[in-house]
Amino acid sequence: MADGDRSALGLSVAATNLAVVTADRAVPRKPVLTLYRQRPPEVGVPSENPRLNEPGLVITDFVDRVGDPAGIAASDNSTHRSESLIADALRALAYTATDGRSLPESVAVTHPAHWDPVAVDSVQVALSQVSEWSRGSLVLLPDSAAALFALRASPGIPESGIVAVCDFGGSGTTLSLVNAAEGYQAIAPAVRYPEFSGDRLDQALLTHVVGDLSTAGSFDTSATSAIGSLKPLRAACRYAKEQLSSANATTLAADLPGYQGEIRLTRNDLEDAIRQQLDSFVGFFHEVLQRNGIRLGDLAAGASVGGGASIPLVTRTLSEQAGALVISAPRPHLTAAVGAALRAARGPGDHATALAPTALGSVSDATIISEMPIEPAAAPALAWSEAYDDSGLMPIRACEYGDRPAS
Image (cartoon, rainbow, N blue to C red; front, side, top):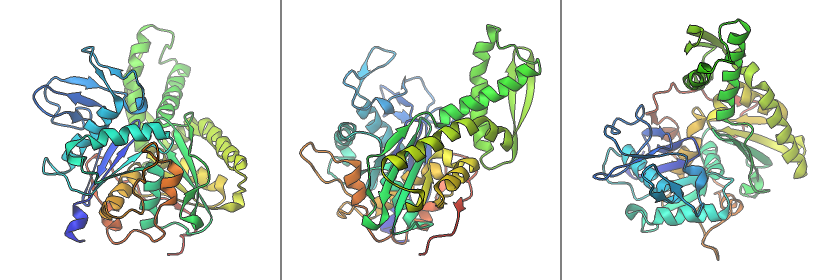
């Protein structure tokens, strides 16, 4: 790989995770920003970031507040704009990837595909006010476009027909329909389905666990003391969900009124817990296709990205319902950031996916996707797909259902 490739950096923004990818490193962080008086902000939670070693002003839940004129009120009664917090968090995350060294000139940032132009524009302005990115060298694009960029590079996707991009995120699922034969131009605006999300799947698994304990007489859900005990159990369920994406069984520790000990969960338990919500997403998927006049036979492929794509049942069900090849990456929660890194490697002078100015200074998702290059990204793709993941999670194997598309 050329030295210039290593100087590129990709960042992704989502409601429950931020991520940065370089040629040899991948770092996810929770969107939690800690502001300090005497040093730059830090991003993440203490278990992720060892530099969170002194008290500061902690701000959370700011990603979904982009464009809110009221701003976010912090615990010290100060008010902060969400887009400025995002810019500060991304800058801190970028420096995490470089271990404090100078940031590369080639940087690309993804935003949720369902954001409206006003939200995109506000983030673009905030990023341009970061001194390192004030020279206009940063590219901003929707995560659906970045995901396609990554998947085209590896393992490859069809170059004709309609592709359904399903981004299974922590706060909801976003569905984007694009026409591969027309430069991956969006057929319709991306649509959001909040009822199928990582957060709701955590809750579904928690309900399953509590139900089993209650049926066995081990846990009294009516007890007042039970309410506070569910928060750590919910966190344990989230971890179990992640483990069951790659393992057939796991255990979680429970400390509840009337029950202390380990609970064994299997992948079948997880699938039973989430099946009803997955079925509701399937109904939404078919509704969106029908609304846009698309028959199942018209789909050339599906793309399964986001953290929820790691759950085998999710991608398998999507393949069955779409009746087409469904492609995912080894670590689907990083697909958008990988695509951003690949886009950044092309350099700011390559206008194939750069933001084109409009009267409002912003651009729609459809315009950005339509400017995706026809040719797959070149050499660095495999290296980025194998970038070291600082999350500490075991890598998830690639999921491909159906025949591999021709290269």
